[in-house]
Length: 273
View 1 (tube, rainbow, N blue to C red):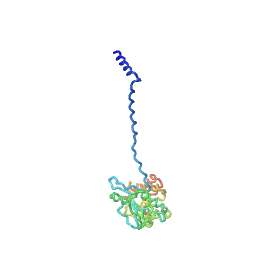
View 2: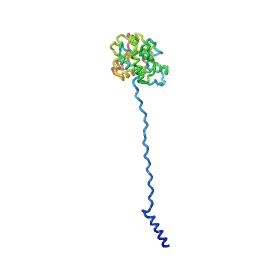
View 3: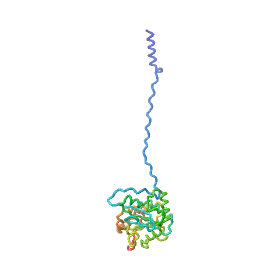
View 4: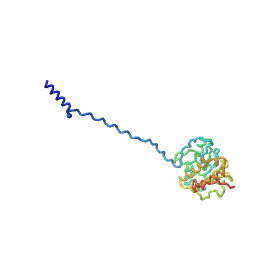
């Protein structure tokens, strides 16, 4: 019996001894750190190449017909297609520098909407169409959306090489002698008749926009954008023919708004004034 007590006591002491206890289980690993928050970002759109423009988007309905500044390449004595509220022509003097023609053409196609596309997609829109005259039989297409800089370069190389100086001179003959481009002037001159039925006539009001003093591709694009913006934002000036009082009042503000070089380049002329 005494021996049993001794054995029990020995077992009890062994259980209580720290060196004989089993080690405690290791602590659980810490939770993983939260995943970093990645903010979603939209890729930046690529810059639009000079001379290329996206197709005309459908525009929201308004209380009156939309007014859109458009463009067309017109060959020889081909009649102007469609009925337009006003018609303009890009006029260069004979023997102009081909590089200058190409620069202006790239601004022309980059800024102005294609007339054929506008007529198809927005048939009720009022258009002031600006003509780039080309020689009969040239391969320059009358209309079409230009979707890349390479396409614009090809088009404008052909449009410059086939520019119809004869038709341009016929259009310029409608201007008073003092308002025509001198032979040494580099141009171009944009001359606009309103209503479109007056196109090419003499002794009527004509809006004259001389870009001879505008140099550099981006400045030419800016000057062409002025032409587009004023046509589209103030159709009451031209949709029923030039309202001479309103046009002159409007033009008197342009030097301050646009700067002297562009603002002073635009004016309304007529032999009888």
